[in-house]
Each structure stands twice: as C-alpha cells, then as structure tokens.
Length: 390
Image 1 (cartoon, one colour):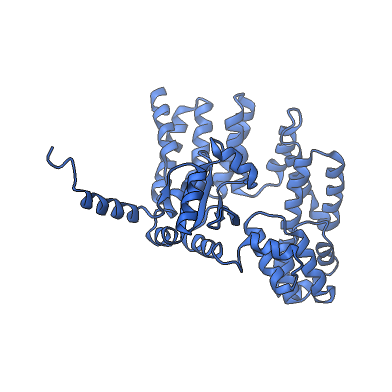
Image 2 (tube, rainbow, N blue to C red; image 1 turned 180 degrees about the horizontal axis):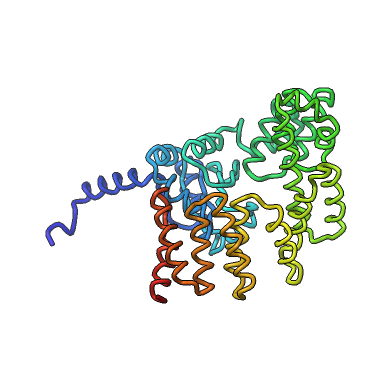
C-alpha cells in the first residue's frame, strides 16, 4: 500500500516519460475543446480521421504513431486528436471536411482552418514529410488552392498544387489540363511531358491519353521504354474499367469493350472478360457466369484469385459456389504460396466440411505466417474450430 500514491513530481515525470515512449500524445476532449487548446497554445491541429474497421488505420496507429521520432515532431508542432468518423462528432466532421476514405489525416492552423489533408496510412518518413508540408504555406493544399483560385498558374506552381491535391484525394484535372496546355502539345512527347502525363493523366477520355495512343513510338522514346508506355496505357484502361463497372450502364460497357478491342486488338479478350466480370459482379443471375469466364480462362494473378475466393467464402453457403471458390484459392496458392491464400483455402475447406484437409492447410498457413513474422490470429481461431470437429 505504501507505493500506491506517488509524490506529484514523480508522477509527472512518469507521465512525461510514458507519453514520450508512446509517440504521438493524442488529446482527449471535444472538437471545440481541441480547437480552443490549439488557439491558446498557438499550435496547429492534427486529426487522425479513422474508423474502427479500417485495417490501414489500425496499422498506422500501432506501428507508426508510437515511434519516438514521430511523437517528437507531432508533440512539438501539433495538438493531436483522434476522431472516429462513424461515431459522435466524427459524423459531422466527415461531412464538413469531405472525409471519404480512411485513414484521412487532416491538418488545421491554430485558428481552426483546414490547411492540409492526406489520405492513406504511411510509414514514419512519409508521414513526417506530410506533417512538415502541413506547416508550410508553400505546400499546404488548401492554401495552394486559394492561390490557384486567385489566378496563380505558373507551371512550377501548378506542379506543386497538383501533387498536394493528389495526396488529399482531391480532383486535380483542371490544374493538370492547364499545365499541359501551357507546356504545349509539341512538348508532350518529351521526357518532361511523359513524366507528367504518366503520373497525372488517368482517364482514357483525356486528350493527352488519346495523344499517347496515337504517338506511342514517340512516347516510348521519351520514356526510354516500350514496356513503361504499355503499362501506363493498361493502367489507365483498368481505372476506367472500374468506373464502367460502378456505372452499371450497359451502353458504357459496350463502348468500353470497343475501346479495348481498338487498343489491344487480338489480345483484347482477356481485358473484355475482366470488364464483364467486374460489371456483372453484383448481378445475381450473371455474376458467376462472367466470373468463371474470366477466372477460369484468363486470370493469372494470385491476389485476384484470392480476393474472389474469399468473397465467395463470405457470401455463399452452397456447395457449387464454394467448390468453385476453393479451385480459385488453389490457383492463387499455385501462383504464390503465402499465408493469406492458404488461410482462404483452409476456411473454404472448413466450410465444405473437409476437416482433415482444412487442418493440414491451416497449420501450413500458420507456419507460413510465422516465417513471414505475420499475425495468424484468424487462422489459429479457425484451427480451433477445425479441431473441435475432428
């Protein structure tokens, strides 16, 4: 009992040591209280806008925020605050500041005005650079936005502004079009033009993309690589493919399939099959038909095989679909044997009541996870269920 109450000074020392050891010292209280504290201390505000189900949010909170160098920088320059975007004040915060993906890291000046935003979980080095940018008016995305709206448009400024918008998941098409117009079409197929187009032009309907398509040889020379240009073209079309799939507009699908034929010629069938699979993914009658067409004939990607196999495991209970999903999981394992796809395989075997096979694969998955220093919590829980059935 005599050690229960520490002298005040010792307690404060212990608290300071603990806070330092834990990295970023996130503050408690309401959003209005956080803003008042920042204003009183003349410090910027850092908000980790997260959700409880977001994997990258959890990774960043566990692996990055506790690091000493991260804590040292943020605790010196920011009042830091965590806010769940699906609870309490977080719901209105998400609407007001257009938080659409997680985690979103939002930065405010001491007056409570949003000055910067980035989307995604980052390692310490990248996070610290973003946090430094949020303190500098020359790199703050919303400060740059105000300068753009007032008429600033040099290409040096536009490049800086576009990069900031990209990091914030904000639309950068208008300044990107302006940059290319000022650069001049005669310079698009140069090293400078290619570097910009390959990074920021992401729609096949864009004039610059059409120019790449019509002048591939020039761009291959500028990029010093035929493969880089081909990969860029494919990447843009795959992004458009997702947009067509979301639209559920059959006319868009028909037009897009024609574009794929024009671009890929005799090799278009694979891409068309993938476009149809994605388009009909939510269709109860046609989803499996088009999934089988793509995955049984064309897919050669371990992650894609695993993704659809896990999706079927979560969604269906009938033997036909589960057996098909098991086949896809096995294809994933054949292409690249890792803990993530052997875990999927084990789960499907368990659901199909093939317990002895499931046990063997689950144990193998746990061993692979251990070897790769990964968490096998879910697989271990599955193994317990399997053992209970044997």
